[in-house]
Image (tube, rainbow, N blue to C red; front, top):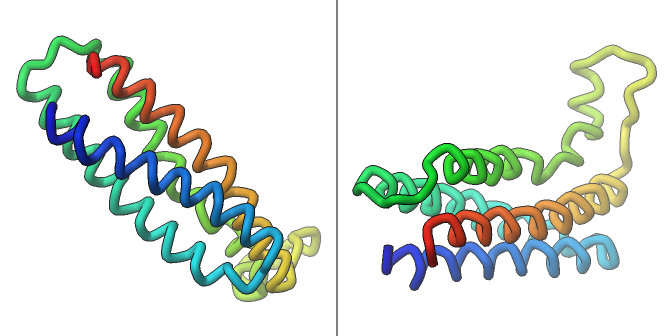
Amino acid sequence: MGLYEGLIYPAYLVVCALLVLGGIATMIWVRLHGALKWIVTAMWIVTALQVLAVAVILIGGHSAPIVLTLGYLLASVILVPLLGIGRLGEPDAAAADPDPNRPVLQPDQIARVDGGAAVIIGIAGAVLAWRVIILLGG
């Protein structure tokens, strides 16, 4: 529990904050989209570390409510694939789906969609991590 409280949880919150700041910056300056992609990669890593740490804590016999804890943990995992959702508007993705109503976005629009998603997911991820730490008694 000490490793989770002392290292993994703060790292997760830092990456969530970076997601929010990077998302806002990307919506303003589209050229920062590449940097946002690096932050998304960091989010994947800290989410995996969080899942592993919480699983070890729960398997170790912690008295936290398992269903709620796993529910919040699962929700934080489900959020991560939504990062980079702008890729669905790329011409290659639209070509794979011949629906005439499917939008094809310009690169600056894709960057802004990714930035907006990063802001929302960064905030939601931080709230979910906070709920997990509360349930674990941290």
